[in-house]
Length: 189
Image 1 (tube, rainbow, N blue to C red):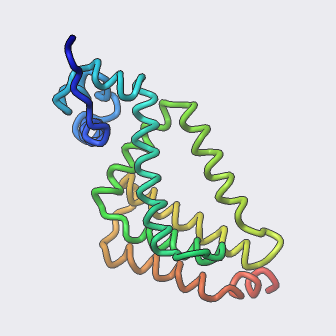
Image 2 (cartoon, rainbow, N blue to C red; image 1 turned 60 degrees about the vertical axis):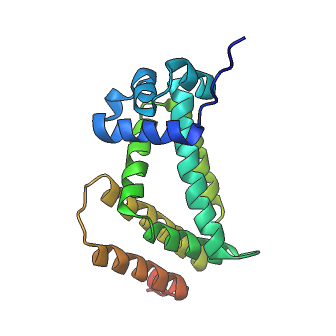
């Protein structure tokens, strides 16, 4: 009886990301991924099933990496505000190569409605963490959305900025988090 070689899932995911970077989303196929990874199409399919499931695995891995960074920065038993500060800091620390990976994965979402629904639910849950009945909660929501917005603008190439400009934006967001009364002053003026 023949023994099948186990496929290294991370290696296949790396290959899939490389296919997206070099050939674009239109070039992403099980065959292209298998060739890039140096494995059989059957090996890719037995590890991930469909192309959509592979896209899900790429997105999940990217999110898990970011979540782990946030958890390290937030420490044990963080408050919602500490978690948000850690989220903003982790987003600021994202390397350009990882931002490019994320942009490719986000573009893949547009062609995978089921995956998009999962991420819509993730954002809904994330935004649900903010107590919008308080100025601090509304301010935290603005900081979160600004962090996500600048990340997407830079990642998709809609906005060019130097590393220094990037860091300054996140410094400003951190400062805003350290001054929770800023929004209440603005909303009562």
